[in-house]
Image (cartoon, rainbow, N blue to C red; front, side, top):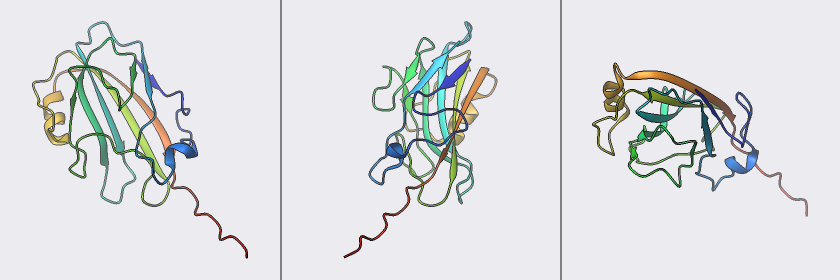
Length: 154
């Protein structure tokens, strides 16, 4: 299985327009070569460089296995969205509040549909995943807050 984004290459910087101060959206993800035995998919976005420890920015599960792209603003019917580290449901996109960070997306192929309601936490999701993982794919991006604009001369 493979996950990638048309917005950036694995291990590369996310383009600046995704990190604008008013931006809170995530780039679209593409998914290929989902294993035939997959019954559902899970998407996780985390920031392992957060001063809080690894911070979860997005949790989605019960994604149909035939899904070939994920757009946080247009999720497939029947998917469930969980709580991020900050107690919010939905995605929390770039930019980080300070410093360079790595954002890591994981797509997990499972052999089951999870009996877990929307709004569940990362701990609850991790517990539900046990024994169901078929395959995983990862995509990492570097994210930096934009440079402050230089003052204009008079």
